[in-house]
Amino acid sequence: MDIGLVKDRRPLEHRIGLTPGGVRLMTERGHRVYIQDGAGIEAGFGNGAYEKVGATVVYSEDDVLLRSELVLRISPPSPADYGRFQEGQIVVSSWHLALAPADAFATLLERKITTVGYEIIEEDDGKAPVLEAMSEIAGRLAVIVGSGLLLNEFGGKGLLICGAPGIPPASMVILGAGTLGRAAARYAHGIGAHVVVLDRDIDAMRRLQSHVGYEVPTMIATPAHIEKALAFADLFVCAVAVHGERAPILVTREMLKSMKPRSVIMDLSIDQGGCCETSRPTDFSNPTFMVDDVIHFCVPNLPSSASRASTRALTNSMLPYIQAIADQGFDRAVRTNSAVRRGTYTHDGHCVRKGLADDLGVPYLDIECG
Image 1 (cartoon, rainbow, N blue to C red):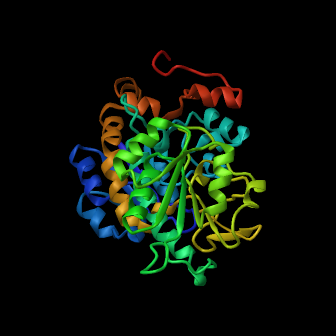
Image 2: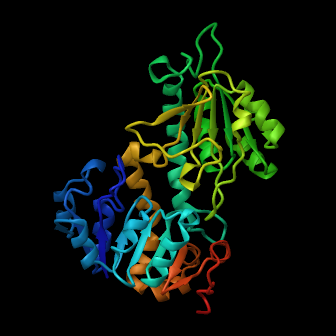
Image 3: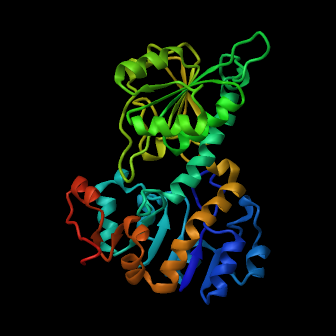
């Protein structure tokens, strides 16, 4: 199969779909790989590293798209990009199609684009390997970046997240006890922050305390408890995700009134629409904005700031699915590999994810039967 790697055009997106090591595995299996000139440089992988393992460097993104049956991207393509894909092409990316406009989604169906989303690939045991890999990195980065946002130079209150002798630590509240929340809680607790975690799922909080330790208190994420936590939080991290769906709004603008001036909200659910009413996407060129004297950080591609590590993690988690699609062809892979099947939004002009079809009011096709 002809596989294409493109350079993302989203501002300050530094990752690429496969490392040279991943490309080598594909070329050794007889597949051709085309890479856009310079696409891997910001992740630390130059053209030469890809050519050495058998990839062909081509000049532009359009050259990649014209040559490839399977295209690997990172960030969600914009609706303006949908018409650039070849009819019947397989495009693997973060899609988040629950947020796509209905008319743009119709373009994907009309052009029979097969869309596979990193964020919804799920194994039979419920694990989401790609999402979990990126969430683990994002959780660690949330503590690193969040501790900086508390400093004066970045607009914060001048707090040290871990405290110091005779100085209490900052209070970090995490809304969501999933992979990202657990990673953030463990790292923040490890460096001495005061950490509290909220979630609606008791089992998720049991897993968190087993993973992090019982020194991290937990609360049920009711509106009253969320508002109470906002009142004492110096750093409030939104880490709520629903597979393939828009994140629920759990923090309203009215609730912000309970926060202390120059406190920080990091809405790391922003790639799924955000769970704070006042959130809007930002990027690292201008990562924060103020609403009601509360600092908002809403960068959707936080793992990109550790692009080399993130590209390696993405390759490690995604390569088995890329191999299945390339080796077997998509029609067979989607029937023999349940994770690929669950990770598919559209195929051959049909929406194959029922919840999305219902939300957009389009016909649904069971891909196993279709």
